[in-house]
Length: 213
Image (cartoon, rainbow, N blue to C red; front, side, top):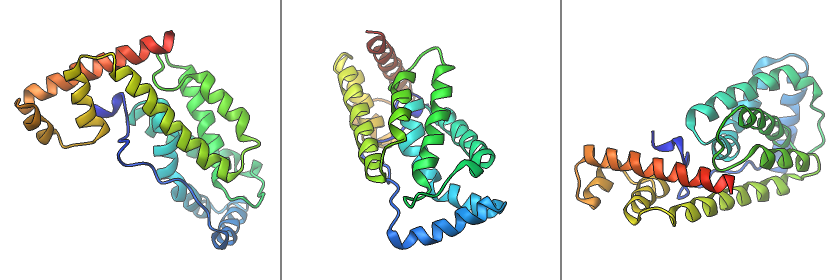
């Protein structure tokens, strides 16, 4: 599928987690309830930040919707198992939740034969920084992540045939509808599907080659 190589549209940036001071009291209440064994409170905390974890943390690093969904599920499993290890520090629940998700992503990357936009070493370094990052640091780090991924893809696109690069820009980066892109290229949708498949294969090959260099 389209998202197997570049799993999100750069045109629609992920909403970063922000906890207003007035919301911290409510979040602390949920954390205390979760510590007391209230699974509903823990579920509310996870659901509050699930979309951000999925789009800003897991998808960019793992490179496919399926892998990111599996990682998000595993993150929730680990959160349930380790919630008693979380200690409230007045900055909200998200920084700790993000660290758990990064550890899941790192395990998944180390198990893979081919890495795409991020390497296991990249994520390991992020985990080293996570212990000292503030919530603002986290938001800035995620913004840099998206910029870094965009740069890597742009560099890889520059090595492709111009037609392949245009296909990926229109369909993946700009997230235009399949039928619209086919019309712009003056091909049938079935022909476009073949062209997209070849374009993504070329992009994947370029990304992997650059990762080994």
